[in-house]
Length: 508
Ligand SMILES: Nc1ncnc2c1ncn2[C@@H]1O[C@H](COP(=O)(O)OP(=O)(O)O)[C@@H](O)[C@H]1O
Ligand SMILES: Cc1ncc(COP(=O)(O)O)c(N)n1
Image (cartoon, rainbow, N blue to C red; front, side, top):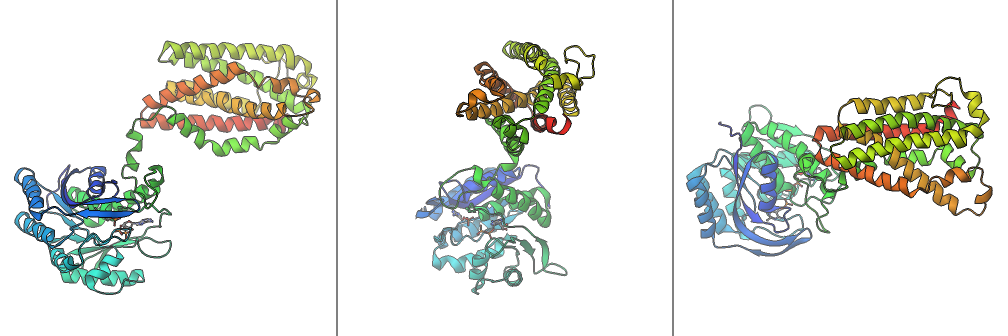
């Protein structure tokens, strides 16, 4: 069999205006699998995720006109057949298939929608049985498999495979037996071909059931996707494996779509999300989201509770301040590097100002806080200018090394993402501490009242908003790989933020 690089795949099916099933699902699935999609519409439905309210079937001659227009001009590598509505439509499709004999014909014997509405007139079932012999692969769900055989619906997977073999025997086509309607946590699929040498079960792919209501159009999507991959690769078992993995991702990502209140559609392009332009704020929101666990751990640290309640040992506070001063010195150099790499003057000025402020705050720490803390001086080991004599603790050293490595990466985006948690997490932790403090009756006598007062700095809050917005813009410009490197840099810094708050307890 010849294979097509971009297979031209024709869907002969009904329209679902809500976009989740029918030709709309087929065109998305064909494109998602790398094919060029076309559609000849058999019938129009009025439906949404809750059900079908009306069906209009145009005269079969108009379907014939569509099919002829396509075949006159375009080579068709694969055909997927879905909703057929009535006997006149089935006859038109049968004649077209007999005249054109496409290399891949996948037939999804659509009878009843997920919502329970009929999509094939009851008197057309015999005509559909006859059409099955023209297909290479038939993809019934369990109720359709049973209806085509005029048998009860299979209660077990073993029974379903037996029914698949019987349908394959009767039609000469391979049957994809689908486990979507089974009870339980498993959702297997199997390719059954009565003419195969050895076992009729040519391939069986186990699958875990994805917990979601969004299964509208899974059968349509599966059948058109498998037709496309088959036209590309010429290997049914491999096509099923590829499509099943894609379908699992599409079901898992379906909640992102927020379409309708019933059985929603699947996310056909879940695998291409990295190629979609990001909305403003979307990237940094997702960075923030991916550090939710670390931030919850920070909120639960004894250091935060003790600073809040006033019981933080002075030795811990002094250690924290002296490490903060040393950190700020390194951080200032890192921000200066961000300024040097910045793609715009606004960003260049912003990071340079950040670098200057760090040195100012460091000096202020020495002038006011650190000079008062004898514990800090006792812990110092003499020497280094700008650090008050103390040496960087293990966390300070590791955090600054991580930031310096990000600045050596040469990527402005990675460096901005690495620098951001120090603004963002510190601002959030400080704002929460400050809000709780402001609500206290006894705040005048709180031993750390003055320090907690420094957390309500509107200039720092504004700088944080700008750092977020610059990092977000860098993320939007970045390639998928650079964005991943930015995420790694950001989440590592968030972990160092946690370790930094916890360091006094461990090392003071
Ligand atoms: N909740 C689910 N989790 C994982 N796969 C599913 C789920 N529901 C359906 N599938 C898969 O979707 C495809 C369509 O299955 P099925 O629901 O049986 O057919 P239909 O959509 O035609 O009723 C099959 O590959 C099946 O295994
Ligand atoms: C036009 C049209 N065709 C097919 C289906 C079946 O959908 P499902 O794949 O959920 O069984 C549908 N609901 N509408």
